[in-house]
Amino acid sequence: MPFRPRYTGLIERYRDRLPIHDNTRIISLGEGNTPLIRLNNIPDLLGAEVEIYVKYEGLNPTGSFKDRGMTMAVTKAVEQGSRAIICASTGNTSASAAAYAARAGITAFVLIPDGKIAQGKLAQAMMHGSVVIQIKGNFDEGMKLVKEVAERAPVTIVNSINPFRLQGQKTAAFEIVEELGRAPDYHCLPVGNAGNITAHWIGYCEYSSGSGAQVTEACVFCASEGHCRFASGAIVGNRPKMVGYQAAGSAPFIQGHMVDNPETVATAIRIGHPQSWDHAWTVQKESGGWFDSCTDAEILHAQKLLAEKEGIFCEPASATSLAGALRDIKTGKIAAGSTLVCTLTGHGLKDPDTAIQQSTAPVLTIAAELSRVQKAIEDNLA
Ligand code: AN7
Image (tube, rainbow, N blue to C red; front, side, top):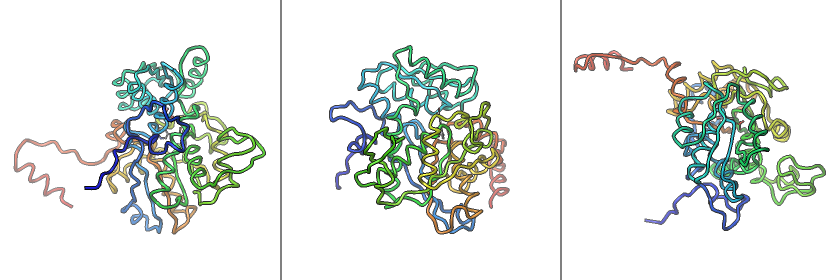
């Protein structure tokens, strides 16, 4: 049998495109390399001539895309001698930070909104031995506190304001281009802090650019003046229109300003003060994409549809990408004949409570008797 090298994570795979030294100790759990699944049944239901792929980021080691950024952020924190990391989180960042800190043998402090994160994520932060700090406040208040405390205490912030996070997350775009042989026409993502949509754009630009271009203003992505690797002028390949969807009760990009009391069933994106505000607007303008919002009902409907019709279980926030795309396909805003990728950012098992609450499938409770089981089958055969 031909020898296939063991996959050891995205830093090893994309080493030449990441800020990593030859002797850097890499903190990895084998993240990245997630499936790009072509939807079969949903496009038929829609009657739409579109190719929809979902990038199933819920299959990362801790069940979300955060691991792509966390392997980089923790690797660099350790390289720089840090003994502790800290983040504010709606749940997935804390789960990922806790796991990678455990792997590295350092301490993770995680600030989470009391009672507002999904059970699975809380379980992860606790199991990996992080210091869980529940605050009587939301994510945005937690983020503000984290920034303030990091100026006073020896801790490295691993939220997406840490530039190494976006560097790791850009690799999702590399994987997509390599599998499709080109960039999709549209790339749809759920948007909270807007770190991930920014990271994907960096990835697509880097992949499609030659050697960069001269820029007159400081580049928002690499902060360089003069020569920028990502500048539009250098683009040789195709890049997607980037489309960001938010939950209606938590939609600063659609309202055009920060939101103070965000609410949504999709707790992962219950964020009113996005940290990558400026970057995301640049991405929207450069790519020719747009932002829009989805109601909680639309989000849950898309989550259910994916689970029932395609066998793919993602968490509510993740389904926002498909919910928005389905609407934009119906209205023709996403053109017939196009290829699109929707990122499913986190696994459905993260939030079992929401799944069970909205499930309408019959759960039968019967006596442990053959005749009763037989009857249940007869009654329910399609
Ligand atoms: C499943 O964990 O912000 O727009 O603290 O968990 O890059 O913020 C989570 C964000 C989408 C939004 N989907 O991504 C956190 C956190 C899921 C998420 C997002 C998040 P960004």
